[in-house]
Amino acid sequence: MNPVVLFEDNHCLALDKPAGMPTQGDDSGDPSLVDWAREDLRVRHRKPGNVFVGLVHRLDRPVSGVVLLGRTSKGAGRLSAQFREGTVEKRYWAIVEGAPEQDEGTWSDLLVKDERHNVVTVGAGGKQAELSFRVLDRWRGRSLVEVRPASGRSHQIRVQLSSRGMPILGDLKYGSKVRVAAIDGGHRVALHARSLKFRHPTRPGAIEVVAPVPPDWPGSGP
Image (cartoon, rainbow, N blue to C red):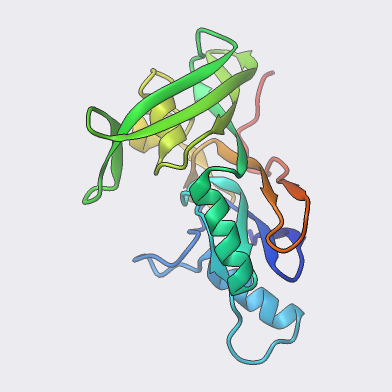
């Protein structure tokens, strides 16, 4: 399954990343979202030579949804600054095992990353991570939860949910007992970057980009 272009202009490119595709190149050597975007722009716009694609944030490989890229160095720099400053509004959907006790609320934790094993835990001395949540649906021991992270820590949503006894469906790394298949036959976690809202880097006004629920989404309710 290839990415889908959700929004594009001279400075910005927003793509719907399928679960299983790395955002950028890694040790696997598998085609990345950035590689795909560069080639797609080259072909569609008939650009000779190298095509600029600026990565301004990332999604974990088993996660689907909106990824924002810069099409110019100016655009990439200004978009990156918004992510660093925490002004980009990010909304995720997650299917979790279990359910929060409350229908909505805010969680704050200190997260520690083990760089060697690429695992994050809640612990003293970590970096502050905060998110708000709202339960959208409950059924058969599972819940559909909307999450809005105020920070952008590695694996933040996955860890903050798992540490409260609610691992995301398919997230074997953080406690789920259920395997969920991605559309390419690999595995995914039931976490989807539903939308991003950001300031345009060169003109007034905000832009919100929404990614539809993908075909390999595990579904909800009967």
